[in-house]
Image (cartoon, rainbow, N blue to C red; front, side, top):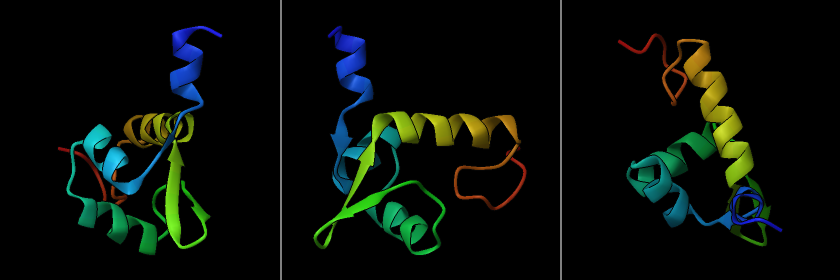
Length: 74
């Protein structure tokens, strides 16, 4: 498996996805509460796949929405 494929299937924690997106972890928790970011639970912890986050971000960017879904990015 190539390095790119390994990264795409990688599972991230809240802290890791907040670093990846360069936002505060509280922003991630707020988005989780509003069902605005793709994630799944492992017990009581949230997890994210890089592939799902990249797809979500790409869709948000192409629709002109901010990552938090609040409207037009200007």
